[in-house]
Length: 331
Image (cartoon, rainbow, N blue to C red; front, side, top):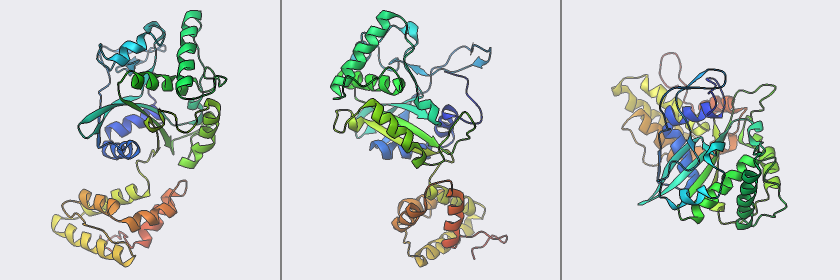
């Protein structure tokens, strides 16, 4: 685990999602995977360590398949599929358990916030280690119907070796999925190109797909997921709901329901009907506005995508006449 930057970066934003915005992030994960719910494993901890520069490191990431029971078939299979633990092995940004009814499946998370994070090449120098890596990657190519000529050691090595892990786990009978989280809207500079929208990732991911050579229909296709996540924690509908909730919480309990009814009436005048609005709390009402108003979703869909998102949100609030003047009343 590298030292976390406290202002930007994929690790920083993922920790924000798992700590401060769990409800939002969980809903995105379940939407992408089709799961009923998700439970996250706590990261391993222990005594304080120091990085190469002497900075303290308190927590660790899950390595290899150490999150599995020692007798799990996938963990046993991986011991002969990849070089020894002295090389460090794979590390995961987060590990979770997806719920599908009474069934559970593992979820491995890889998060990115800038284009350069997509690129990597194999650094193994030991001939025996390199041979084993090549053998496992080539077997993964074969299982996924990828041409052996595709270079998985250079260019996008991390992505390819993650495919190898997922292939070994599911082949061994340990149901698992992998989600690649692509954050947008992060702080960039001359060395960090951070996409400002979901579309901003498309050229780089298209280049990755061309290089890796995955074709539609392979047996892991339904177990690989992409999540495009706004670092501001929501698309326009989520931010609209959050602002609406914040507005309602500024008022007394007796006034809130009156305001909810006014908001509902104004939405209906805009042609947006809320099915089964929930007046139990500002949060519940905001959720019901987002999830039960298809007219609102359609309207937002036409307006979405940064960098105009902030302006679009204000425009949307204005269009819906949900304006908060100084006297605190809708007008």
